[in-house]
Each structure stands twice: as structure tokens, then as C-alpha cells.
Image (cartoon, rainbow, N blue to C red; front, side, top):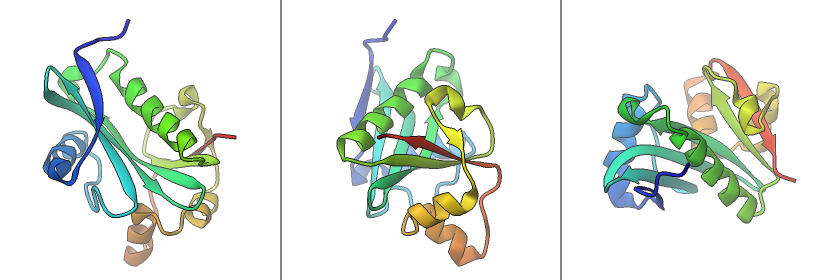
Length: 150
């Protein structure tokens, strides 16, 4: 069942604080939120933000940047709606794949499969997350994932 009071809209620069707060409350990294070369969305219920998600775009591929639903709004499939909206957007822009870094969860239920870190770092080298890891001489913790869109 779809909750008609829930809307997903593209974020504007004025939404930076909202996206940052949602990501922060979910324990996600907030660096470079809404940076150039990215697209973000805000999920609202009754006009109040309850979730956010972003994509960092490369040449023919994107990196999923955060998929967060506030704790009080979880459990109703809103996270799935956010992820699938980003997947549809990436397909519409002609991406061949979406990548992501994850510290938990089974992203296979969203059609992702685990891939080596080098694949992600090599296919979206200019994504803000990848650049931040390289600048710090760091590597993301957890697992790297890919969803083919072709």
C-alpha cells in the first residue's frame, strides 16, 4: 500500500540543511552534501521531511549517496521507495550501473551485488565520496555494491 501523504521531490540548494540533518540523524556522512555533479531528493510526509537520498554522477554510472529514513518513519517501505526512485532516475539518465558503499544491510534485495572496492573507485573516480576518501588516504569501511542498469 502506498502512503499518498508521502512525496519525494528533488532537493534544491535550500534543502542542504534538511538533507544534512536527515543523514546525520541516520548516522551517515554529511560531507559534500548537494555538491556539484550530484542529485538529491527529500522525502516528505505531510510536508515534513522524513527521508533523503542522493546520487553522485560519473560518466555513465552513479554512486548512491545515503539512503536515510528518520527512525520514527521507518518500517513502512519508505526506504525502498527512496532507493527505487534513485534507481529510476539513474536509468533515465542512461547510467549503466549504480554503485554504493555500505556498512550494513543486504542490498541484494534492491538488485545490488557485492563488487571489489577497486571497481567502484575506478568507475566513478570523480564522485565526491571517492575524492574525499582519496584525499584522506582512507578507504570506505564495509561492503561495496553495484546494481547493473543495462
